[in-house]
Length: 201
Image (cartoon, rainbow, N blue to C red; front, side, top):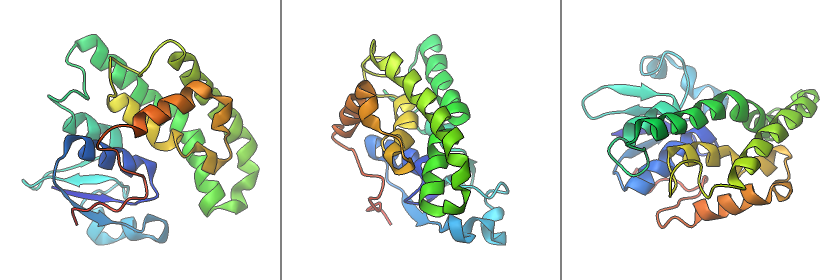
């Protein structure tokens, strides 16, 4: 299989992290999305939405959207609960991550790194991102992981942009349980850094 991604993208990092946890071989194509690499006719033929990540399977099928890709890859592994309710709870956190968490924390980070001209958007994003981190902090006061007894795709989905939230101006020191959870995630024996270029090129 082949993964189209970008090393600065948290959404792409989620998939790379799960692939590493699963020790699944793949080839990797880095896409310079900020400079239009995902808007070419060649890439739009792979994903008409013009977004990464995209996973191309060996049988020619393709799958987009980071959380959908993770749900597919995690099937029949410890990272996706078998129990129907717990599986739904994992999906609940993943939907929340895309609707409430990522649009604030990831966008604030994007503006800080790539689009300083949009700095007037930051105060509202900081408020919304702080609210999201507070929800996570409350959950982690009572739970070691977001679902179950170990890291799941829900944890991976939330970790991707949370662990680099300070790039967007958030202070993780204000959220000690979130900070401790990030440290637990990094202790996984097959953990890779967001900026690590995949070895399987």
